[in-house]
Length: 415
Ligand code: ARG
Ligand code: ZN
Figure 1 (cartoon, rainbow, N blue to C red):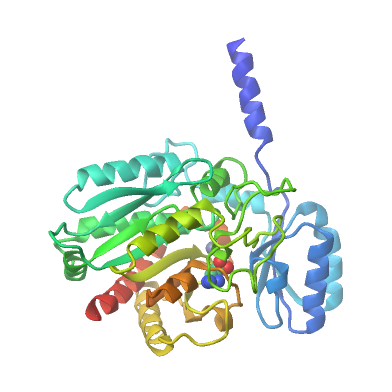
Figure 2: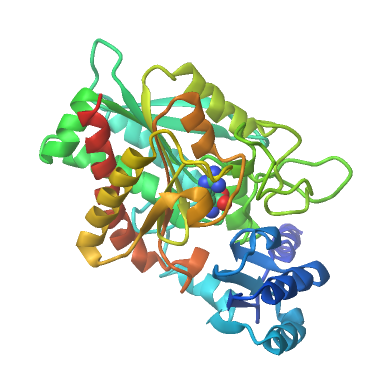
């Protein structure tokens, strides 16, 4: 009886996991309006998963388009795309194989590790133990709960001082499937506490400033990407009148909300929600930053993939008032990053550098008055995309540290 019950539960759990056998990720290079039209038409007739940009509407002439095409649509997709004469490369030959390969040493027990993609429950216990074992440097604050009731945990890192210090805010894991992002926030926290006292820059930074780190913003989505659908991006909230779940949290902030590069369709991966901050996760984050507005000097939000260092604006082509300085700092940070392993990053304002997309937290924070507002898109450039192997966590985090330290040094110098 017991065995049967367990078998039944396992079978139900397995049945609910989305698999990607035979799916391919294609890179398309539309260079004519006709190519753009073909991609949009294809997206209208079959279910495509846009990896970059995030939706068909954001496709324009001259950009690279990475799409996951489910196995059952491959024949027809190849026919239509090849007929158009558009450049087409197969980037991932079998998505399920790449999903399976991403996690190394699957068999061995998986405890929390900085070089693995940790589960939410491992990250949760890790946050607790980091806070208890570094009580002189780290304090933990729950800034609210997610839609499904999980805590959004912020770790404040810095030498404790009598007076309030200026701060940098950094979040990871807006989008569930961008697992290297979550890994980076954990790496950062560890680097900060272990190199405090030996690394002069970290020491000075944490003496004079605090760094607020939110390692997992979209907790519900992250859990779902582990348990049920590796390619989940959005939150997990219900939408009226449809069974499609979730809102794109990076289209849900009050910055030109839903005017461009976002969708009003709840089934879209870039659904902007019913109003700015309609998602509880966005509201919790925005409330926290508003409350600490006077001390927060920089806002850094970590995504993947594409190797970009972006800054405002994304909701308009207008240049930010601080454009020159933001660009200067972005270039310095990118070259610091490159110095370690040669990884090349592109920097610039969101709209002209990739595509316009309104409602992002970076633009919102900037307009609120947080001058140093940056979005990082970590490795890679599409070879693995969201399925970056665990062997790349260490080098990615090491090089990204250099960029963050560069930005932080500039912020500190200009307090
Ligand atoms: N790939 C990110 C996204 O679409 C880029 C974010 C850039 N910033 C922005 N406000 N759109 O969410
Ligand atoms: Zn993202």
